[in-house]
Structures are given as C-alpha cells and as structure tokens.
Image (tube, rainbow over all chains, first blue to last red; front, side, top):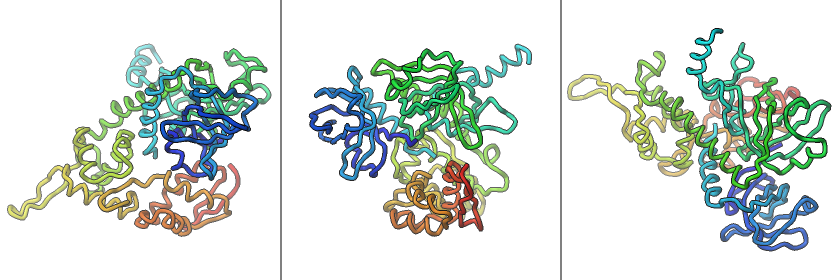
Length: 106
Length: 329
C-alpha cells in the first residue's frame, strides 16, 4: 500500500493524478456526497461517497482528509477524520518541518 | 556477559535499550549486519526497540495473528503484525474500528529477505487531537539530535589524514565531502536549488572544515595546503559532481542533488516491462526534465539499481545497461 503525502491544501495542484494525499481543511459545504473544504483561499472538492456510511459531516469543522487526487484537482476520499480541538498553528508548523526533513530523503 | 560489561555497552550505545521514536520511512533505512540477528543499525547506531506512530489504513486477519497496515505520511507504510499472545486489549469486533485512527505502536522490526515487518508488542490509540503532531515533533527532534550528536561530528573536522582514503586525490575527497553534506537532512531547510555561495554559508554556519587542497603558489614556487572553504573551490567541486551525474544545474548558477525520488516516477512505467534499457529511461527523463541532460549513464544505473532493490520483482542487470525481470520476490 502506498503512503499518503502530507501536504497543505494549496500544494494539491502540485501533486500528480492518482497520488495519495493527506491535508487538513475546514468543511465549507456539503451536497450529494461532495464536501467542499477550504484552507485559507484554497478550496478542494472531496468526493466522500466511498466513506459516507462511516462519517458525519459538520459545517465549519476542521477535518483530516486522506484520499487520491483526480485529474480535475478534486479528491477521492479514503479517510475523513475530525480534527476538532487540534492546535492548528502548531500542526501547520510541524507539517512544514516534516516536509523540509523529507525533502532530501536519499 | 558480566554486569560491568553490560553497563559499558549500554553507556556506549544508549540507543540499544531505549524505545526509539522513528518515522516509518526510516524503518526501511535500518541496516542489518551479517551475523547480528536482533540488532539493526540506524546511521550506524544499534537499535532494537522501535516506536512508530501512524494511522491504521487496513486490517487483515489471519489465523493466530492480525496484520495492520500503518501510514504516517512519511513516504512508506509498514505492516504491523499483532500476535494473539500480544498484550493488546482488543476483541474481534474492535479490529475493524481501528481503521482511520492514529495509534502509537511499540515493537521491533523483522527483516525477511527484502521484506520488512513490524512485530508489535503494544499498541495505544492516540485519542487526543494534538497527540499525532506531537509524536511527529518528537521524531523530528530525535532524528536531528541523532544526526547532530553522532553523524555531523564526522564532518566537523575533516583532514586528509583522518577521514580520507590514501588512494583518493584531495579534490575527490572534497567532492565526496560535499556530497555527504548535501544529503544531510539539515540541508533540506535551505532549498532544493542551491548555489555555491549558499552551500558555503551552510558549511560555515555548521562549522564544518572541508578537506585541504594543494595550491601552487606561483610567487614562491611552492605547493601549499589551503582550506577549501571558498566559493570558487566549491564551484569547481560542484561542477565536477555535475560531470559525474550526481548533481544537475537547474538554472544559471543553481544546482540540485539527483536523488531516487527524481528517477522513480520516470522508472515506474518501465518496471511493468519484461526488460528495459538505461538509454530508454534516460530519454524519458530528459524529455520530462530537460535540466537532467547532464546526468551520466553510470550515475543513472546506480540510482535505478537502488530503486529496483525494493521492487516486487527480481531484476538482473546485464552488460551494465539492461535490466531483465526474473520473478517475483
């Protein structure tokens, strides 16, 4: 099984189609199995139809999304976990540090 | 072994008796030495007991054990084998509910051939929302501590007498030294594209002394040994590394290190063929990334060999340029 790439929402465009990605974002709206999440000025459409029976979607809730990127820059969600109560600033700082450390992996 | 010998061993190798916080991708860099079964080596430090943190992606049940695939978004996943005798409080109904949750799993790594499996002793769910990123912070800091305390000092005081081989020229030693520095995780903070001046700034900030080079003084007619901590010498060394295919120039004065991560996406379509040639891979690479046109065939062969070592199939290299697939591992 391949590993997910830890990214910010704005970095999704730089990933290839089919890449497994993981990012944190806030739920903006939900309709017909498509959740629109937002992080800053970047919106991503997430197709949660595969995991719909296991999740609950609340507007303005921060969530961890793990899924595969499609050609149209939307994401096929594999995991959709609530991140309520998390220190978002520290989390972002850790993602930056992890990306820096992973950059030159031999 | 008597108590004092054990104490001496534990003092010399503090990593042997501790739970080592580690990312899953680093589990695949642990090295096994022939004749030493239980102990693995991480940056040459002996380790046995490991602690990973990640999200459970799948649960597979077998007779007597359960295999759990864990992912911490570090680039690799690992299969954790939970034996029925392990002290993990779970029931048959609970297992499928693990999927999507973050766990801290303690255990040790088992290497069978080219496969790696994590034998879990204990698994604890990380229920607090901040627990996962805090675990990442522990691992990032620990790895930095290991590198600063044990690995970087190897480069702190380099001289031709202690860290270089007699059969290599001083310039070759300098090139190798720069290559080691570029592979350090600390260097990743700077950027994927660096200039000679930026590299020199990093070297001076870390107080690394590069090997000395013989310099002919035209006034005195004598050869003097001088330190190579200057931009011009480093530029020459970087250009030499470009000629050897270890670096590429991406724009005007900026270099980037060639790593398997650059080659892997190009190589993926070729791995499904029964055989392929390095020239085809090189053509595809230059097509996608024109700045890699300076890479040499020998450097590309080495990188491809490193990538294929972890492949599902067994590959044989013929005539140093062609790979033929044998069978599944």
